Amino acid sequence: MSTKTKAKAPRDPDYVRRVRASFEAQPAMSRLFGAKMVNVEPGETEIHIPIAPDFLQQMGNVHGGIVGALADSAAGYAALSLFDVHLEVITVEYKINFVAPAFGERLIGRGRVVRPGRTLHVCVAEVFAVKDGVETLCAYMTTTMMAVPDQKQHS
Image 1 (spheres, one colour):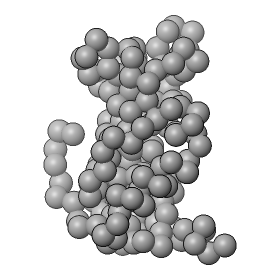
Image 2 (cartoon, rainbow, N blue to C red; image 1 turned 135 degrees about the vertical axis):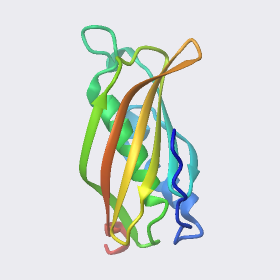
Image 3 (cartoon, rainbow, N blue to C red; image 1 turned 90 degrees about the horizontal axis):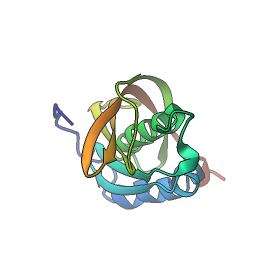
Image 4 (cartoon, one colour; image 1 turned 180 degrees about the vertical axis):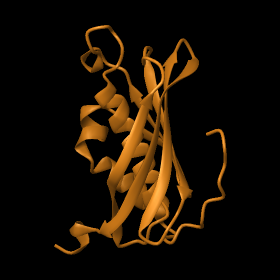
């Protein structure tokens, strides 16, 4: 990411395991898109999706819905890394700018918390298409993430 904001320390010392477990429990990312979370740090994540033929729209680039889903997940899990142990995350708002078509072999989503709060975190995500080893920025998202009680812990 281009500008760094010093992230707060995670409220959960086991945040990496919790973020990865939440990600793996999300069928759309982990199973449908074949996404892999490759990095989790306080307030930051990186997720990769291998580009498959079924992800393409009629012009041969990745459908914007998949690019948007990746950006949303990258930002959301960046926020989750800073939340308390008994909380999960939901998106309450986002805006995405598609700046280039996504052609290539892989998508990379990098999410980062810009402004952490007690309940709301403002985040950004950048999505890059990787073709022949070259990353091209294809989307930029700004978003607000909200902490909510983890329903799995209350069932």
